[in-house]
Image 1 (spheres, rainbow, N blue to C red):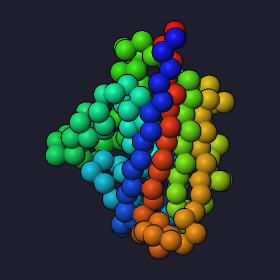
Image 2 (image 1 turned 180 degrees about the vertical axis):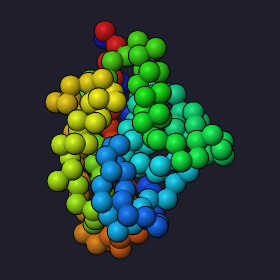
Image 3 (image 1 turned 90 degrees about the vertical axis):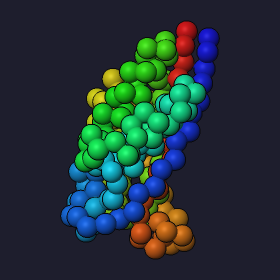
Image 4 (image 1 turned 60 degrees about the vertical axis):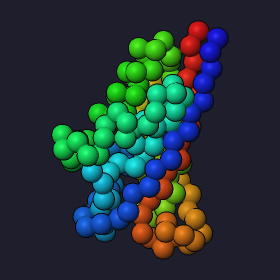
Length: 159
């Protein structure tokens, strides 16, 4: 049995807008997130965790931000690609653990919807997906409310 772990980390700054997209879920907020695609920091981080477990680079190598075709793209495209690559390489995704780091918006009221959406995108049981949040105790850029950071771990298994 081949068991692999991958970690992902990403950050996006707040900018103009009235919502953020996290785990593919639209969350009302006084600002949006800035990025080349839809700036879904969670989906980017989870995709990177899968790419890392596969030793297949990172999201920027598969979907270069310099390529205009990804401008404004829905980030589920990136996660679906990572999951498909894992399948092609003979791996199943055992579980994903995702931690959003921000002072706001509050993640708890949306965590179930986020887990359900990730399960749908990845073709997994919702019990295999964790979405949680923490603050940085008002320290650093997340503590000052300048953006959102995300950390994710993915476990992949090949029988």
